[in-house]
Image (cartoon, rainbow, N blue to C red; front, top):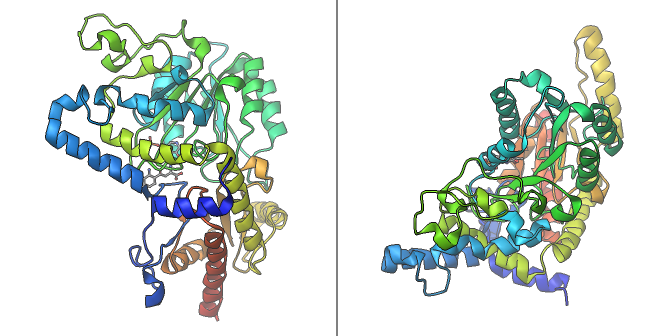
Length: 462
Ligand SMILES: Cc1ncc(COP(=O)(O)O)c(C=O)c1O
Ligand SMILES: Nc1ccccc1C(=O)C[C@H](N)C(=O)O
């Protein structure tokens, strides 16, 4: 039976270690100082959990008592030599793949380069990379440098798809139209599953299908999607995907990354940047001179993975497993995010997105005419799509007027009240109730504190 809401609240509050208000320097009355802070920042870094902490301590102890032997003999059966095997099945389940389609390895940007080296094979007719505009900078750098590596000018090779004027997120039909229009010149379609700035969950299945219909390769950056939304990469016919694990997978800062390569590539795509960890484990330690790749994604492994980073991920994945993986978690996530949204929308400082869009359009015109900007009252809107099917846990709040000090001042006030989100300049604060450790109470508190922050701002302006 899937766990019920209250059982989850109790279980999860036991599993996670969240900073207290005092720890984060919140300026709250003494009676609230030692309560856990309102942590809504799992989109950036998931919190510590007790299992990961215990597993890390165990591995440190084994390192201290067995040293190199730990690779081959391990008191808990987690021989370091095969440490990735402890997490691969769980990762495969999270992304909707078979175990051999998944490798737990490296870090996100490095894995992205590795996958682009394997899959981005531009030709004179088909050389473009289609991605979302304002992709996370590391991805933009990676795309541009890959284009250059193949002798292309990134300005010509990279097609960045931006929202319509006055809008903040992409329309599915516009994405489909662009793929259909540019398809024959596109080599690679690569989007993020969930957009880091807006929180938009892209229609992954539809984009993949459209890209494949045009003969393009389709890859995904799942940094903000893995552990946040359910996925079925194998069934969707995705070619490759990459991710990090320190956000929704709570593996700790700089945690180990991962990648997916569809099974259909198993016999035709050989790892070109081979390393000994991608070699057949049966003979790896015989140290043969010739590389013989493990079939599938794991053939792309290069180095022996960090055991500490891997067990840190394992602790969190065990909790995912215990609560029934993404089915129950997505349900809880939808409830939490709509609760936060509902409370935010009741604020008297909330401005509906269509009003902001209209203002932006107007502002564009005004700016074009006389270079002035329209100075409105402080307020905020939510740029994350309202349709729950088009978002994960995150809500991105855009503060108004744009390019003012409102966002920064509200962010400072929220921190002082123990609410941890993150700021993305110029105007956005991201708030993310993650289903593994956030509660309806967190959503309520965040909305109340936002209201207080605005009231403080208004008072200061008087
Ligand atoms: C979408 C996206 N891509 C890439 C990165 C960079 O990841 P890393 O530093 O692990 O390579 C991040 C987060 O930092 C991200 O959110
Ligand atoms: N790894 C970090 C270390 C320090 C501060 C932020 C990050 C992030 O991961 C940012 C994240 N990718 C984002 O969506 O903004």
